[in-house]
Amino acid sequence: MLSLSEVSCAYPPQSQYQSSQYTPMEVCSMSQRWKATYLPVCGCLVLGGLLLCNAQAATQGFQSGVSLCVYTVLPALFPFFVLCDLLLSCPLEGRFLGVLAHLWGIHEKSGAAAVLLSWFGGYAVCAQLTGSLYRDRKLSERESALVMMLGCCSSPGFVISCVGGFLLGNLQLGVLLYGMQLAANLLSTAFCLPLLPQDASLQNPTPTRHSVPSLPCSISSAVNSSLQVCGCVLFFRTVAAVLLPYLPNSVWSAPVVSAFLEISSGCADFASLGGRAALYGCCACLSLLGVSVWAQIFLLSQGAVPLRLLLIQRCIHLACFLSMIRLSARYLPGTSTVYRTLADRVIPTQRLPLDAAIVGFIFLCAALYKVRQNFYNK
Image 1 (cartoon, helix red, strand yellow):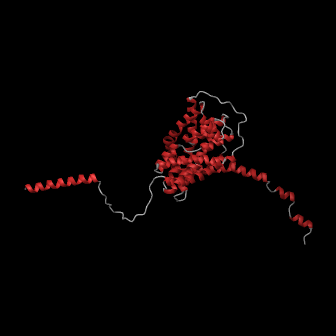
Image 2 (cartoon, helix red, strand yellow):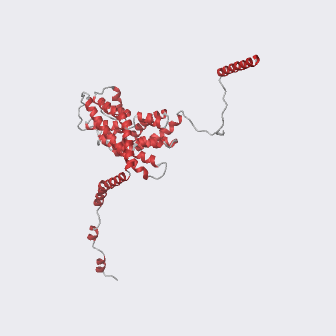
Image 3 (cartoon, helix red, strand yellow):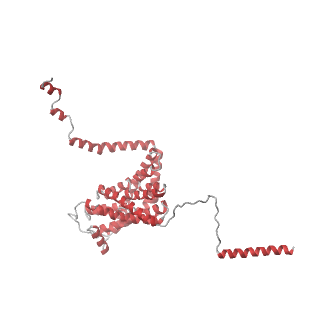
């Protein structure tokens, strides 16, 4: 039997036991320090090593990114950046904009105009206009989130021409994708209304200034925004080219990674699969956008929109988008695969039209008459 003193000596004092453990605050600070410092450093080191080990793949990815920026991104975005900045600097009047602003819960007509311009310019134009209006204190935090959720979409040139006409081979399907994407914007924003910040109006609103539109200022702002967009595209194109050789040998590896990093590459890779995978994969790319687009939104909006709320809205957007496409795509005219029992080398017979048959009969009679005359003369 052990005495009480021997038992007390067998275990350390309670104060010594407690001092050897981390407090919850220390554990939380260590996890935050790991997420904020060590994890990004490790990721940068690994990515730098991959870039050095695959210099040729990185070069090819960078060249493809430059080609994409020169031939697709800049022609599609730069003019819209200039025109949208000029339009927002003009005095906006009209009952239609007022009705839309009231319907969407936005106090300024410029917010409704920004949504309409974003539907034609795309997500980059939406992020730039939202950030500009928020910095000018024309939109509150709640209103800027509304404008971003309502207007964040891919441009009609990309959806209709590139995705629908070129990648999926059906221009009508591209028009349907563009319309359903806007409808999903409205529906998913309605679901996210309870999650919006509660500041319904600005605390210190500034009076609306009707300044004269300045073309050089608009061009300068468009150049900065275009450079930010192209920088994101180049970086993530290079990263995707470096990561592709290390992916599992599967048909889904390249489309999933490309869609995760960059929207245009993801749509192209999913379209190469064909069938329903091509259609629904492009829908997923248009809804979830990809890391490159999120980086562009973060740079252009400059903190005007809470990205966590926007991510929730885009996930709801994906569910609404896929549901509407599944219900409406079946009514589009197109081709369908049927079962046939004919062999591969079967030449089907066809009947000539009546006028062609008459002309052929007359020609045959004339040829026979000519042959008869030749034999009769001999």
